[in-house]
Image (cartoon, rainbow, N blue to C red; front, top):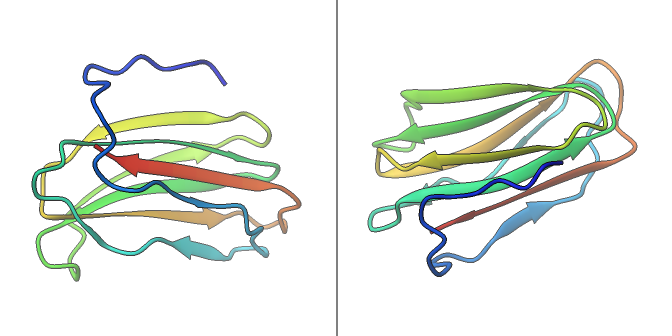
Length: 111
């Protein structure tokens, strides 16, 4: 994975979140809905040994995820991500493909 330069490398203002729990075929991992007022960005990385889809989602009410950006994840090809916070809540969601995983790492933090 290539390093990513960020516009604002300021101090971390929320603890990082991560998972290494592998997913079964077509399974989904969903983070908590984090309140992000006062935080300006989410940064993270993901790598998996099977194809899947990473979603970065934003909401005003934790029910309707009105902003959803996604990336198709290629096996064993790590991806870094960086997004500005626009709404009140954010969450990260990962949907595994049709083959069970043997390796999975997802890490993110808010600043």
